[in-house]
Image (cartoon, rainbow, N blue to C red; front, side):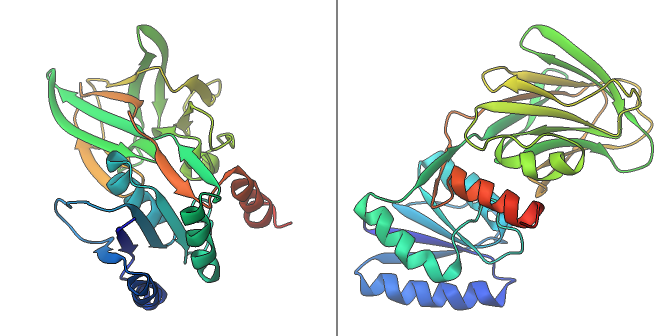
Length: 272
C-alpha cells in the first residue's frame, strides 16, 4: 500500500481535526495521503489503495459512490449521530487500519444500485447509490407510477412516491416509511411505496438481479423528483422511464460488518 485517500466532511470541526491527525500518522508510516472534501463539486480523479471517510453516514454514502467504482476499500470512521454504516469509532481507526494491513479486519461487501433515466427513449441521467433511489413529489399531490421487473408488470402506484432501497438503505428512509430491516449483505431490493392511496400496496422484496423499471405516468399534477442517497436530485418529467439495476461492483467496507450493523439496531433503534 502506497496511497491513502481521506474523505472529509469539512463542515464538521471534528472531521477536520481528525483528518490532520490521521494525515500526520499515515505520512509517518511513509504513505502518500490525499484529502478530498465531501462537499467538493465536479469530477474527482481517484488513485488510492485505501479510502478513509471521516464523518457520519452521509459522508460514507458520498465516499462509496466515489471509490466503489474504482474497487478501493473504504474504512468508515463515525463522527455522526447514528452510524449504521460508519461503524468505526474515532479512537479505534488506527486499530482497524492495522488489522486491515494484517489481513484480519472484518469486511462487508454492500450492494449498490445503478439508475438510468430515459426520456423519449434517450438517456438523460445516470447515477449510482448505496442507500436508496427515491421518486417523490414536491407538493401534497400524489403521483402515478407503473412498476415492473424485467418483463413482469408488478404494480401501479398512486402514492406520495416510491423508495427502492438496498439492504444498507433499509434502515434509512425506507424504514421510516414502514419498510423491513434487511440483512446488509443480502442481494435484494426493497420496493416501498410512500403513503400509498391503496392500503393493499405494501413493501416488496425482489432479487437484486432483476432490473426494476419505473414508468412516470403521463398525467401528473405535481413536479416529480428523483433523489439518490438523499444527496443527488434530478427532476423527472411525465413519461420518463427509470431503470434500476444492481451495479457491477460493491463497496467494500472495513470494520462495518453484519455484527456492527445489528449492534447499531439494538443500541440506536431499540435503545438496548
